[in-house]
Amino acid sequence: MGIKDLIEGKREWRAHVARVKTLPNDYQIVYRELQKYLFKVGPVELTEGTGLLSGIVELFEEGAASGKGVLEVTGRDVAAFCDELIKDSRTYADIYQEAIDSKSKK
Image 1 (cartoon, helix red, strand yellow):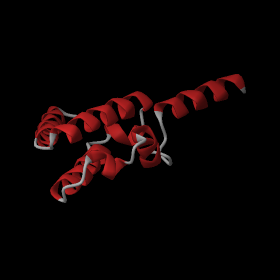
Image 2 (image 1 turned 90 degrees about the vertical axis):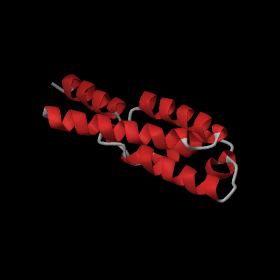
Image 3 (image 1 turned 45 degrees about the vertical axis):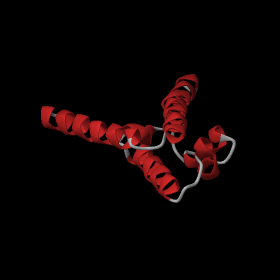
Image 4 (image 1 turned 180 degrees about the vertical axis):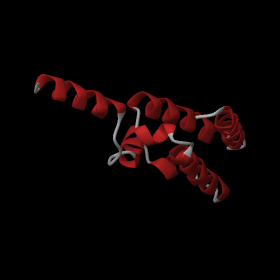
């Protein structure tokens, strides 16, 4: 990863954050909680650009534009909403567990 990639990644992230800031306040609050949860759970794809997070922002933008409340978009169980989004994703916990399992088999 070169310096140009880092600069471009930072530019993309700033544009992403600017989009989040244009959402209604309740959407911003739920987005930040989703983001914290996803960073904690650690799906590997999350760090590859802002794909998953951008998809969430797009969904939230559509919901806000249609006048829906944020919980109408995510459902009342926001953690379950996140889990559904990443159910087929590998996480860093999976990678760590695989490493431990392979060491114990030696």
